[in-house]
Image 1 (tube, one colour):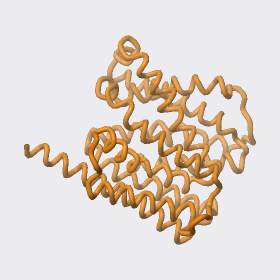
Image 2 (cartoon, rainbow, N blue to C red):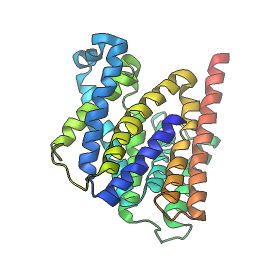
Image 3 (cartoon, one colour):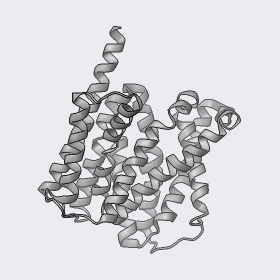
Image 4 (cartoon, rainbow, N blue to C red):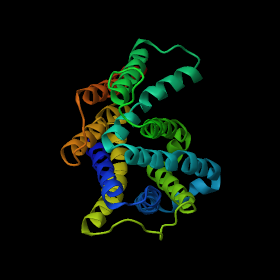
Length: 291
């Protein structure tokens, strides 16, 4: 829950920098990746020693692909969704990813989704409808660009959960996540150079930037990894519901984002998908233990 809350607060601070300080999305995402990636690798090195470089000898292609079409897109699309709307909308839309993963697994395994999966997918679609249209057919309560980036963020998050599964098992989340950030940050540097700093910079800007990098990225990612080891993916995925809630509360009460009854209803529906899917995975795990 701490990790999820830090992710949510970091996103809200990013919204403040975009909308009140004129900071470039490209620059912020580049710096986030280039700073947090090496720091995460340093933590991994303290545990594994020189083993953090093993991935480049055996799976260089896999880690490059993960950095370019996994880590970088999931970071960029989320920040773009925040800039096009607000942290609350962007975070809730990104949380449709578990339903997308359920659809993908059902298709790849060539089986029809079971009742709980169907309910979760339906809830995700209904929640998105409430959030982006406020229950009115043919009318968007957010911009088309915000909807595009928000759903793109969900697709990227779903891909990010599926694609690196093998190398995560082999090399660990710290090393894979760290190298993915480094690769993604270097690639994004060709789009926006790190030294091309834009926006208004004062004490608040520097404090928020430091929080986004150190707490909203590095600490949050590391704590989530620890949670995965302690309680498993099922409970961890359920507890990450603290992220959209913290993002929504901060956006509403601090940044003054309008968040009405339909928005809260959409949020509740989308969070319901996480509860359904996490419970299903937990029951599957218990069944495997029995057999």
